[in-house]
Image (cartoon, rainbow, N blue to C red; front, top):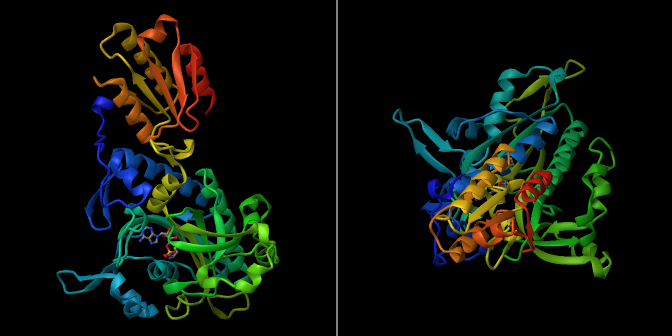
Length: 436
Ligand code: 5CA
């Protein structure tokens, strides 16, 4: 992509409404613009990251055996009356009437709707287990939307729902998601901290939240620092002792905190920190299936209400959380897996024939190798170009100027370390292609 043709409205001034780094940087780097309180437009650069995050989430869901579908954003109120949540949900739910005066709502979550889809289609325990997910916009009329996409009113969530014949099978589905979540967040370069959590309006008696540690996080966490070393490959979701094995490491939100149990963690490993909640798992048994009559014929010919769990990932929140984890004074530092472009190519002297040719050549070779490159060929000062590239945080920069070209070299800079290296154009291409 040539920067002169791109849509990258950067902000020079730090926006006064932005209190935390990720919000500031997303505005400054031209990733988002606020449309209304807690409602954002995703500009091209931000949208690319959102899609990368979404794709990692999708791949790990698919790998864990979940099936993607797409439910609508709007739902009829009747479904929520069946579960009893219509009144309970309160002012966070956006309610309205259509032209026929039918009561509708903008979905804040989808337990009722998926239960309706399931009960219409599945009759026998032989069709279980099933695990269905979608990645769809939600609306929650938060009292205090803040921190940009971190706590929005409209936000993108991956939510899935598991259906099993009994509790034991449902817990296997739960821990399969646990494992998939660890993998998902690690692929984004994050260190997820899974903690025992309260269940709130979703309900149920078993829940974990996944957090990314950040000073600006909204949650208070207490955990054994060893949990950061948890290897998801060692988790066997089908093991009857999996729950106890995970409980081995103390980790809880303040709502679930047990000071006496925490005191038993060796002192050097006791960590009290703030966290950003990027995902949550719930096991709630028959909370929805029983009142909504989502039943199947069981193995003994009896009728059983299916056992369910639901599992959410804050896809749009993750974009902010990743920036909180990876930035410096100059801007964002994208992990390769979610970077909007892998390489930023800077032409220091766009008017110069040799520079133009070298840049064009490098650009075409990188793009031809499937390496997304943002090519800054604008008439701007070198200083402004360096600052832009550092701000938008692409993992690699290639800087091409007349002085280097005379010696047959270009400069390769790694955004994360700032390390610079001079090498031939061929060697630069080989390095970047080889890193993939
Ligand atoms: N139905 C369940 C799981 S599918 C559910 O709604 N869970 S949740 O309430 O925990 O939301 C799932 C994830 O969405 C959270 O972990 C969080 O990462 C994200 N999320 C929740 N509220 C917001 C918000 N206001 N803005 C941005 N992301 C949010």
